[in-house]
Length: 245
Image (cartoon, helix red, strand yellow):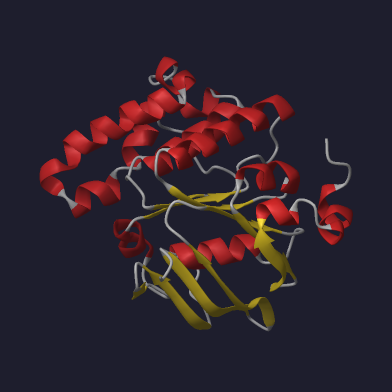
């Protein structure tokens, strides 16, 4: 059976530099799949290519059986892929609530009749997942802490009812206690039925919550397998995990 997302031999180039070199993998419905690796390995580039921010030089990206490689960002979002980017990119001139409303654009464009009702339901879902956002819904987004801004970025991505939630470095720059909470929420989002593709440098915490993972090195997959196996793989431990606590 075909996966929800199938990436087939994609290559991405920045001028003479090959950032992604023939990468292939699939994400089944209901899974959490992780892409691990060092800085510059091609992780974020892979996510941006799936989301339509970058166009691949070659290869196919099948989402629900349809090739979306090279499609525009809005078409891909309306198809059901929502991207929470590295660095959060929340809209600093807007309130928390207004940031969330921005995330409903593709939902409203796709289904104008039921869009407003669904948007309100999704907003309540986000507030249940991240209660602090409800407390601060009228607050300017730029006054939030780093952890709260990350919650807002994930919440905004959830506002479009995605079939696939793409998360790029959600733990970046956060204190360990906040990271633990963010990963707990990601697991809960998955349990409620959203398929997740995540890029992370925090390999140990990521492998604890994921079903399957692949490791990128210099734009190519160097290792992949069930997370339960990779977390005990000596090569991965030496390269990325260190002491497992």
